[in-house]
Image: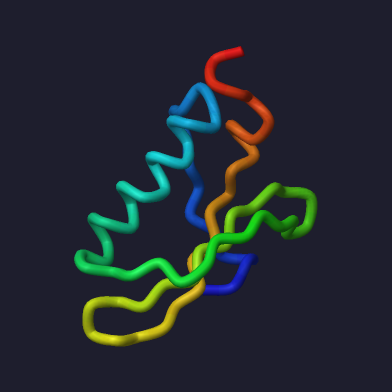
Length: 77
């Protein structure tokens, strides 16, 4: 998945809840995945988390999450 096709995280109030939602999505979509790397980046005008994973079957994937709804909102502040 390239950054033009992002998973949009909505309904979170701060970064802690947003990041938790990213990992919940990964667990649901790719049970048994292994995280290789996480990086903050920009894609166009959107803040994006790029998570590089290996699925349980060994496939290497880069998953991009649109985090603009909660980026910079620190723990409910």
